[in-house]
Image (cartoon, rainbow, N blue to C red; front, top):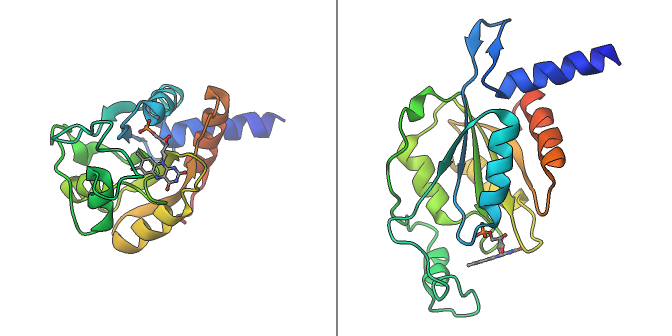
Length: 188
Ligand SMILES: Cc1cc2nc3c(=O)[nH]c(=O)nc-3n(C[C@H](O)[C@H](O)[C@H](O)COP(=O)(O)O)c2cc1C
């Protein structure tokens, strides 16, 4: 029991802002998220709180309207964008000190079974080479597995840890997941 509590403490240290005594360095954590209608934002806020991370909103240069988000309309902006996976929607580039973060959680709504291409824009803007990146998402039910696999293949210079869909997750569930994923030493 005591060991379990000690391990939990280490888990928080591994992703949190506390000093990692063993390596005598601070693990700086960022929770960056894109949210078109607020669902992912709520999860991102809880995740930043329980990990002690800096919270950052990934903003499109042009916000998505309700009409843009209509996936039943083949001609809507999101449909057109997601049909061309090489397209990179412009984002506001105002993340400061991007290179100083050791661990970056990136959150998004699942669009067409994967991450919106705006997430590609974010990663390609800041690079995160050699950094630990962990996805989280909300969805109408689809899993995050396709996004995990696609991005791991596209950006092999990043240390990926498998992300999770956090639909309707409580703060406690988010905390348990974050501690577990931060403590895992190996990448996946
Ligand atoms: C363009 C578009 C495509 C979507 N595609 C999927 C999908 O493939 N699978 C799924 O489960 N939900 C899908 N959804 C639903 C969203 O993932 C879900 O509502 C999400 O929680 C919205 O998050 P947000 O409020 O942070 O934008 C889609 C929504 C939009 C707008």
